[in-house]
Image 1 (cartoon, helix red, strand yellow):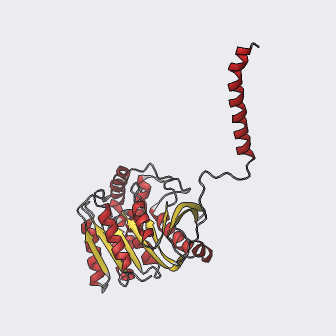
Image 2: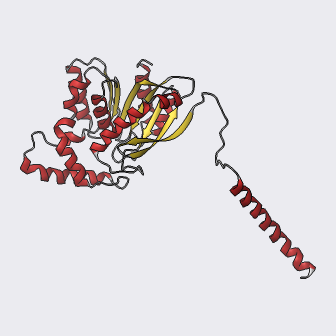
Image 3: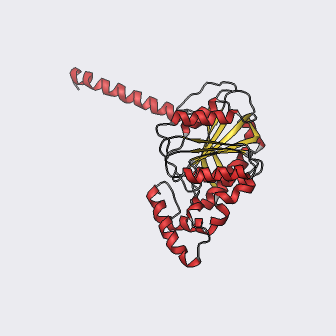
Length: 304
């Protein structure tokens, strides 16, 4: 090899040696962290967790509020299929001193299992039970006796089902709640069920089901028809008439049903119902700050 060739080859050898040393250091390192976080006592944080629900582990995030706590907690429930996750609200609610849990129901957005409305209702109960575990509450600096449900669209349906089933949930909020079972005609004759199932299935399919696993549009519609009488919003009036409620609506076609539900709660004696209408779309696309302000103002009225 000539001196000129050797000079040309030397940089290649140096780069190879450097690359080998870097790989060797990486593989021999006892622990590798892509993100280094300084130890800060009682600082705001985000935790990724998996919540057990009927044999599956639901993917979830907890936005942990700053301070020693114990903090009240809000469970943020997404809609169908859940394109608008409202995580801007999660950040704002945390800033106001609340822990916020966001999770994906079984069969949705990568969580294992099969999605269904029945499973979603069970999953909400599982999420509540998870936060009430003493070791979880301690880790999150959270008050397990003060949990609020906040749901958007189908998440509003889930919030109403979850609160009605759990008397310890004293407050709930809905944002353009979808009365999923309310789309099933009352007193539906048996011989008309299949026609309704097909129409409901077609409507659900149009919403976009790509993020949902283990389900079909007709199967989901069948679930609604089978449970319509026990899931309709008006069937929950007696169970919820002593709760604090925030009911927010928009120009998406769901306002009438939500206002009717609020009025039924009030007629049943509930004096703690707050309603608000924002002139925007179903995702509150151009009213995000106003939406957040309304939720925060309502939360501020609740005991901590």
